[in-house]
View 1: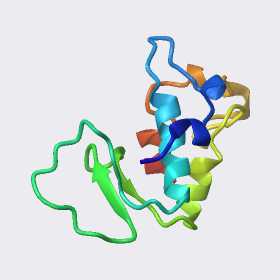
View 2: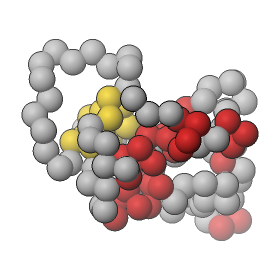
View 3: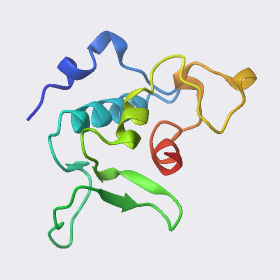
Length: 119
């Protein structure tokens, strides 16, 4: 068990306009993985069989989209470093500088499956 507040303080939690904390969940997930805690699995994931351990474990949403609900990356991986760098002021690599928005105003999944699939 880990205290999410130690990773992302309560006063820095971000929500989408609909109230979802998905952005903060993604940021906490990446920072947990950077602490080499092992495999991250969302609480609402139902596993039909054991997940074999490996350095890299990905859950797929589609053939082209990697989902963040089941994820393991080595603490020193370049992909994880890019994901951990997501914070206010982040510009998704698929957007132009003139399209920069506050983090909570990007489309749902920009900091999650879309960013992970890109990196």
